[in-house]
Image (cartoon, rainbow, N blue to C red; front, side, top):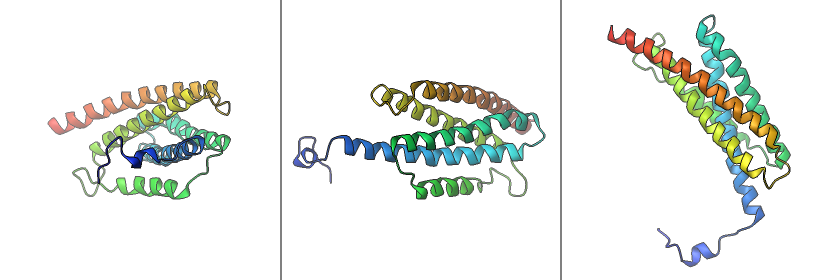
Length: 181
């Protein structure tokens, strides 16, 4: 049922720091689930591209993504936000299920699979950067958040985006050139 903006239902919502911390906990746990997906997807990409230029380029990015996930867990601990294991497990399982899409081929890996993996990874990095930006803004009023650390994480996310985008464009051109030829 729709509630009008000036109805009594909205006037009785709880407010205050407790609600803010609860919402921040939900927000950070959602980002942790996303970080789990990103860590798994990046590691999978590196494994499937092992020995290639793509694998060599993404290896350091995958390592940083795993470090960023650990940094998020540390920030959550600093803030006293409990980790929600069910969200982490859901992210992990969702990433595994996401690999099942055949992308036009059933037996061997499709060139589109790499493109879509890179696009998913890029979106995940963009989401991570948005989370770091949110925490950076909160650091102005919360001494438990280190602005310099968040600036470093933001800059690293931007570098990761640049690398993944460069390789996404290369893979798109290769996959579509192969398809057109």
